[in-house]
Length: 236
Image (cartoon, rainbow, N blue to C red; front, side, top):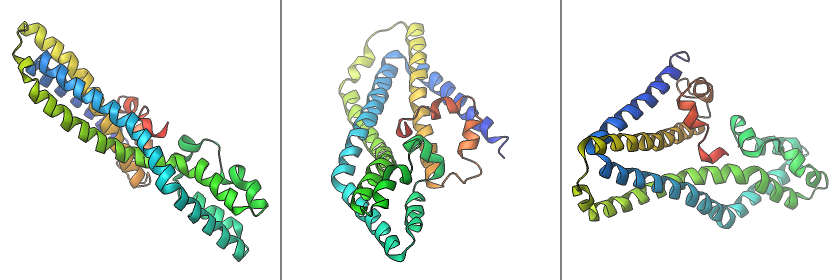
């Protein structure tokens, strides 16, 4: 299955681009450009505002609970005389395949080892929460926020499009209108493929990269799909 799945994902890329170009060619430039604007603006609003919102949510509503959970785990391990069991339990929360993308070379040992050695579990919990867990949790919240904000922005633009539908009746030479519409279709297809890549990333995250038909190994073997997958914003 691994041999054929990269080809299938690349075929999906080709299909999305071709179908988007054909559809946009048929509806013409004016309608296509409005559609592209709505997708583009919705995408960037969802991306950047989602990151901002996720940081606010983490810092104000989640950080203290994470620090308390880490503190309790370390404290229980200290009382049982096996601190490493607590450290390993905390480390196991973030999937190994995401660790390098999210926190680089940071580990619990080099982030909070000094505090743990001094039994300063409060400082250790704070350091682990901020430097280890914060990127991971913000990534998850960002993904959720992205889809919510993207849907909300698309709904807003749909109403704006309805109010400005008179633009469609403006005269444009037929062939030029179609060709420019097709060009808009390429841009729209790129945005759709980024969204598909994000969905693939979410599936891999939920399934812990263990599915036979979608995992990082298969995606790394694709040629076209990987071009979109490697630029998704949440693990950068």
